[in-house]
Length: 379
Image (cartoon, rainbow, N blue to C red; front, side, top):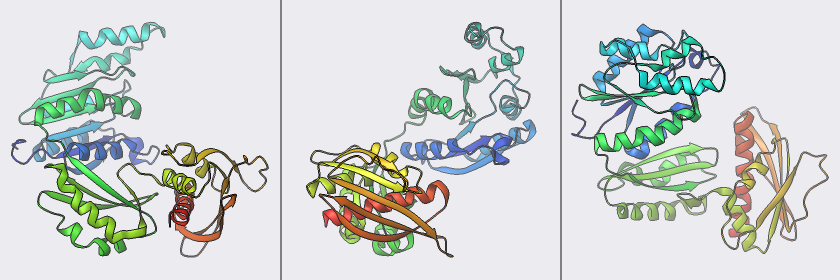
């Protein structure tokens, strides 16, 4: 494969029997899919593998034959079932060798902790074609292997270690290796309209967004996002974004980095409130958490805190109190959400419905409440 022809594509291998058993959620795959998209590298597939050296070796060999970039996470620990190194070694036909440059920092790391288990020395092994990737917050170095027209990246499965290694070690190498052109993107964010309805409303903007442009629709807890991107001139994105905003009307709550919490606080500020509090029932403090993380713009109301559940008496005194109750779920899986605003700035009680269960149900209820506030006071 010639990575310079149309740009590289990638495959992701998530390694660990605990992933297949459902004991661990693969958040690394979601992070890397998004990160690759921002680099303009399409992800053609994700495969989850057990801790089996033969299976891993076969997966590496197959992936290297299909794509220019293979990214793998997990299986770099010191225990007997951490066999990603052995798997790639087998796929490449190279023997693992001890690297003194990797062993020294391992011994230094464990010096303060006492005796280092001999099993940790497995983390100082590499194949000759591999360049070690530093791991400043863990014991498992990564690998960068550039051979036979393809690149293989190995990273730890621990999310914090993987993300730091990706940002500091892998991304700069990818940019240099593949001469990546920057990807420019714009996002139109909506609430209260489903994916299929939105697709009908924007129609040709999805199927023919413009020369050199691509478009897609993505559902999130905070609504449905319409995204446009290009490797060309970023100004080409302005026209389709403007057309989408015009067609979608009041369903749009913002673009790009806009969020519903900040928009709701701005709406309450527009209505005359300077302070905002929250009260919520059966949502596990989700509304409080979302409002606490908002970054209000100039002129927006300021969130000062909230109270949880019906027995709460310590609701902060504020110009506006957003009240949210998550009620029963019907036979179709829709939950009733009761929303109101009390205080000097107020909103009569309204009910909306959301789908989902557990944490997702609570988040969607909170975002539905914020959208009601946004719409009422910006209308």
